[in-house]
Image 1 (tube, one colour):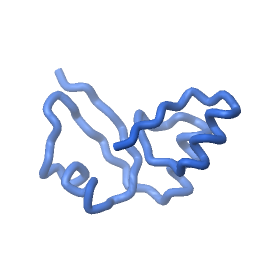
Image 2 (cartoon, helix red, strand yellow):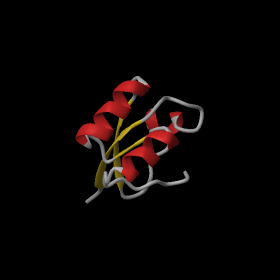
Image 3 (spheres, helix red, strand yellow):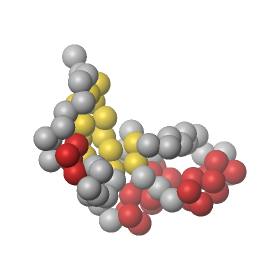
Image 4 (cartoon, one colour):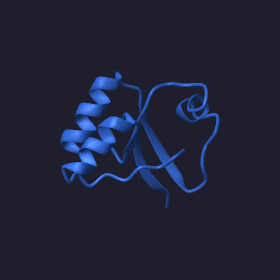
Length: 75
């Protein structure tokens, strides 16, 4: 059984193969949502709508400062 993850992110050269399914990580079923940045940030920072998303470093630092339970990853 695969782990299902919902990820909100832009469609970049580094993410496109995952988004279009040409690269499939073993053991993961990825549900990619390509959304405008402001929508991603709003939904993640206020409602935790995704398992993972991109957000700006400044938004992440502010969120952590006020106690939001987010974890950063360098990749």
